[in-house]
Image (cartoon, rainbow, N blue to C red; front, side, top):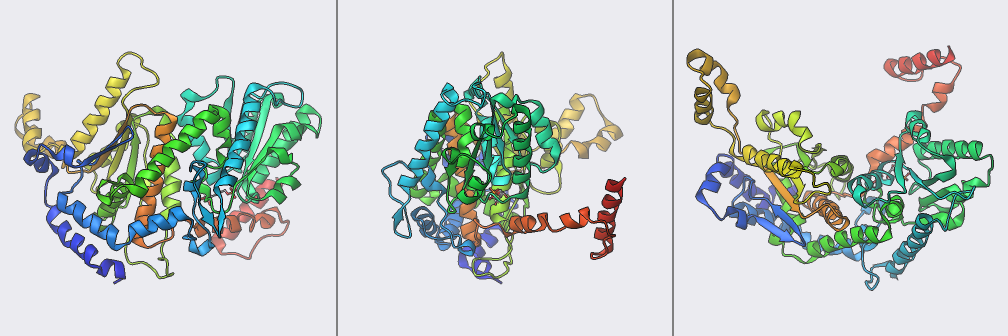
Length: 548
Ligand code: G6Q
């Protein structure tokens, strides 16, 4: 047994779980009309309703004890103050500094990094304004109309998710495109939509060594030069975002169009840095700054609110409650906002790359679960597919419902219908449908006898399925910033309790190591025999086919 699972707070939760799992939320709500007030929080226009969870006040107290036992408050300060908490890479973790106001001080090795952050933000402002106003144009003098981000993983998913989520704020004169996959179909289909004279490529890569990004960047460069007929066009049509200024210059990118960031920004936490350049180009720098301000507001809340009134802490500890005590392995993110359709995919990386770890901070294998599989789709679409499993499957799947009170597209009754679906789902997941209720329904439909009895078991819903609801006024930049920071910090909370490093990613690095390993063999003229029989045959099948 590890220190964690042996600890008093963990043991107390374990025996409390034995009591709670037999209780019903339906009864909890019936017995306490004040449950919503007790288990909801409001902050800066965001309502977090966590009353539809299998919890009592005692549960919250015990979860808070566990957070305290894990020294969460100390860890929060370590993160914000720039301590090198990413120990396996010996790096500070300071995405919070990227959204800090100018007058703050955050030191790494005795140097205040905030002036550097704002120097790059100022550079982004000058550049984005120049591109959007037409002061900076393409090689043939035409105004830029297409922004094409070439990057993968952390250098793509955040900007893509945000550009989609904030489409109503996007310039009508610009379109934003994202190319990630080394599969040529990705870039080929994107290039078909572009006019080379009005396209601006942003090569986003922290390391500037990632196979996919460099392959796509070379293809884009060749396409541009071929269509415009001049190598000089590259200077006007390419920008780069990287920590590797040597490689960006080798690629031939005009140093004025190179935007810097730093190794203390993790890829999946980087949308707040210059990696957000496509966002700032698309929605304008003022809106990008609103996004940063929203995230900063959540950071301040996280840093200062007491644990029991702290959104990321409660969200994170509820995850621990289900994951470690009820044994749930996944949770679903269900945004009732079509603009947030990439939000579940974005959180997939944030959550699974951060906490998908099997050893603790001391390098010892853990004996408890440390992560969740994250999945989801916007409502109402998901209702017509996987919600079946959430309602009636054998495993409990905790859910987060997210919804704006007002729509960017107030057409007819659409939004009222959307929200009625959202609220009905959380209610039904909690209440379920008892056998008596199901029977009464079938009787009302005219069923009797054997026919009724045969159908009855299928019509019963166990209920007691937990959900959180996050409601906000409108999906605007500030709110989106808050929501993303909420999940970033929730993931951090869980990593602290699990005593793991949320900020390294050796599994992803392993993939990068593998990326070029087999390449020479696929090109080889000789039959490949060096691997196991499966790998040999797969390689040789491709070699033989590509020869024909
Ligand atoms: C993020 C990950 C990973 C990374 C990509 C791109 O946390 O480490 O998704 O962002 O592999 O890496 P580069 O930005 O270095 O190209």
